[in-house]
View (tube, rainbow, N blue to C red):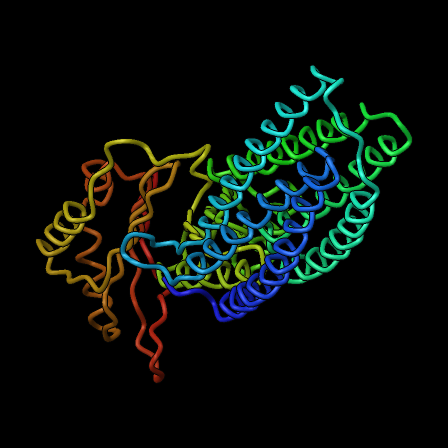
Length: 403
C-alpha cells in the first residue's frame, strides 16, 4: 500500500529534519556532558554531575531517535502492511522509560547525600560557570528543535525538543543550587540534584504514557475527527457518515468509515463515491490512509431481515417463471434493505408488435405468487427501450406487484 505523494514528500522532509536536528543535539550533548561530569567531579557538585548524567541520557535518546527515524521511513511490506510509522512511537516509549530510570537514579543518589550532610564538600565556583553555559545552550537547542519539529509535525521530534527544555529547566535548578552552596548552604546542591531527578522522571512518565496510548490504537482528538467527518460529508453522493473510527500510526492516523449513499445506485457508482470520499480524506495531512465502506442504509441501526433468498436462487426462479411464458430477461436487480427485498426485472427492448405480445404473456404470469415464494417486499417488471444512442433507458410501461 504505497503512500499518497503528498504524504511521502512530507515523510521524507520529516526524516531529513530529524537527522539534522538530532545530529546537532548529539554534538552539543557530547560537549556539555563531558564538561558537566569533569567539572562536577572537580568542583564537588553533585547537582552538576547529575545534570551531566542527564545529558548522557539525552545522548542515548538521540541515538534512539536516529534509529527509529531510519526504520520508520521504510515502505510497507508483507509484515507491516501499513508501514513502519509506529517505530517512532516505540522510540518515544523507550525514551520515556529511560528518563524514568535516570530520574529515579538521581533521586536515590541525592537522598543518600542528604542522609550524610556532614560529608558534603564545598562547591567550587567553576561549577556555576558550567551550569550557566549549559542552561543557555539547552534553551537554544530547545527553541531550534521545537521550531523544526513543529514545521514537519513530528510528535517524536516535539517530544525530543521538550526533553531539551527539561534539560534547560534542570540546569536552572542546578545553577540555583550551586549558588546557594557557594553562599554556605551546602544542603542546596543535593536538593537541586533531587529536583532534577524528579523533573526527569516526571518527563519520562509523560512521554512514556503518551506513547503507550498511541500503541494502544488511540484515536485522533475530537477536532481532528470532526475535520475528517466534514471531508467525508462534503463528497458529492454521500448522504451521511457513521461508524467513523481512527487510530494513530506514529504521527499519522488510519481512518475507517461507513458512508451512506442512495441504495438504488449501481455498485460502480457507489464505489466511485467511496473513492472520491477517500481521496478527500487523504488531503488531511494527519491521515495516512482511509478505508471507506459503502452502505445503502445506516447499518448501525438498520439491517436487512435475516434469511432472505440469495441472488442465485432468485435469478433462477425468476428466469424459470418468465421462461415458462416465453419471456426472456435483460437484467435482474436486487435491493436488500431493512424494509425487505425489492426485485427489479428488466425485459429486453423489442418491437411494438412484440411488445403487445409480451404484455399478453406477462398478464398470465403469477407475479404475486412469485413474489411470495421469493419472500420479496416488491417485484417490479419494466422493459428497456432501444434508442438511437449507445445508451439504454428504462421503459415507462411496467407491471408491479407490491405488498
